[in-house]
Image 1 (tube, rainbow, N blue to C red):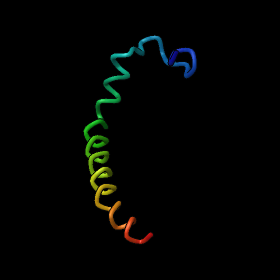
Image 2: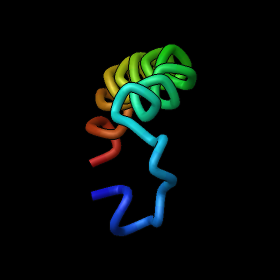
Image 3: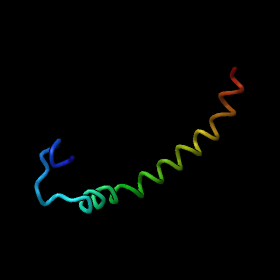
Length: 50
């Protein structure tokens, strides 16, 4: 579908797409964990204010 919707070149493959997604994956995982920890610690503070 990428070839149809985005006019990707014929050499484009799913292997290439996964390679592109693998580059920012470690950063995204770290940010997701940090966001979860932040939300976990922020929840009691917000519940006290109600």
